[in-house]
Amino acid sequence: MHRRARVPALLLLVALLAAACGGNDQPGSGSGGRASSSKLTVFAAASLTKAFEATRDGFQKEHPGVSVTFNFAGSQALATQIQQGAPADVFASADQKNMTKVADLVGAPRVFAQNVLEIVVAKGNPKEIRSLGDLARKDLIVVLAGPEVPAGRYAAEALAKQGVTVKPKSLEDNVKGVVNKVALGSADAGIVYATDVTAAGDEVEGVEIPSDQNVTATYPIAVVKASKNQQLAQAWVDHVASGAGQAFLKDAGFLPPE
Image: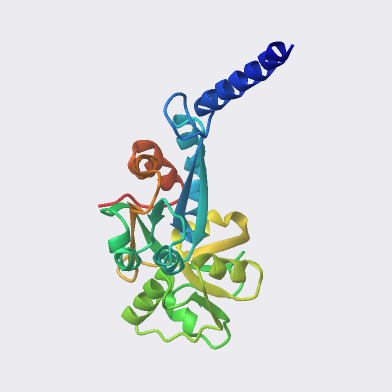
């Protein structure tokens, strides 16, 4: 009687051990066997929002079980977060300066796109803004990105080249903040990337800045050394630089790297 009682207990133990061993083949287990689910976190400049979100589906189809999430913000803020140990797999900056800040925390950077500046104005351009010089008019409310933000630094450089002095009503933490202020009617104009005007659609309009007055923004990308998924992070970098990735960047208004 005692021996019979043991049989179910032994069978239960065997079943539990088998289930535990078989668990290693389930998605997301992280150990050999079948395809596992993984999460890739990309820190990217706010101006890359539209292009990166557009190219995500293609990347995820090429890598079944992979989920890509983004942290979009000013490049200076992202660099600081990486320095503080924030969990990032890839960093895409809107300038070389902020990539250099984290040089010891990332792999070799690769330039994957360029951008130019444009004046963003309200729909219909009711204030009839035609040039950088117009931004100095006292009847205008102008907002710019802060001097620590790549777009803000580029804007300051462009204005300085033309000898134009602008007193902005506010300095935004990222370039999207400038677009939003103009779109909402809180400002008459600002200086952003041409891609941001495109991304805003019908909410705003853009006034082109001549090439001899403009500033070219260079975008580098790199794998974060602390990433726990180096191969997948490198795959994202390669995807962005590939024909498919470059096509989405072009559609968003970015220029190819030189």
